[in-house]
Length: 245
Image (cartoon, rainbow, N blue to C red; front, side):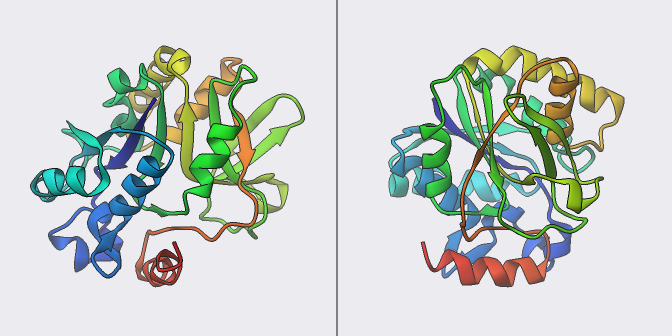
């Protein structure tokens, strides 16, 4: 199993930081970036290889690759997303379809979270699950969150931003454990998803799997401080959180 980070997005709501950097390289604690936190978490749970999907301002990630490898003791492979500024992240994850065959812990390049999330996912393995989503069942939800409805013993039933928050079991935080056995089915679902609409999220690919009868499981992360950084308010919160890790 290896680490996988989606870091191809432009993050236009974080300008001027993202005029020259992808969102994953915006600092959240001194020189520490979201990408640094992801790599540190992966290393702490024993992953020694990481793939990073890059696109917007990818030259900034290429320039830091060797330094990041040395700092976190991981070997990094960069995967180019040629449509990063045109299409949404269902395509971005599909670009890593060969990597998925090794089994991955996937982390969004804009999610500031502690290593307890990765530890929770790894501890949840072993009962035949193929895909396990990190789920926050504590946070109060609103319209923007990626909401999830689960059913006892059946896993995810629905995953979308477009639902009444009151009906949701919790929020998907942007971290997933994907076993190698799920790789081909997930890649096919992602392809179906972005071919239907290139603006769709990879979470819509998860929904496609569920619609096909595939069980997508969840692991509640407990009361954890984390944030998805989309705008400057999120960035301020991320900087409050990141210094605690």
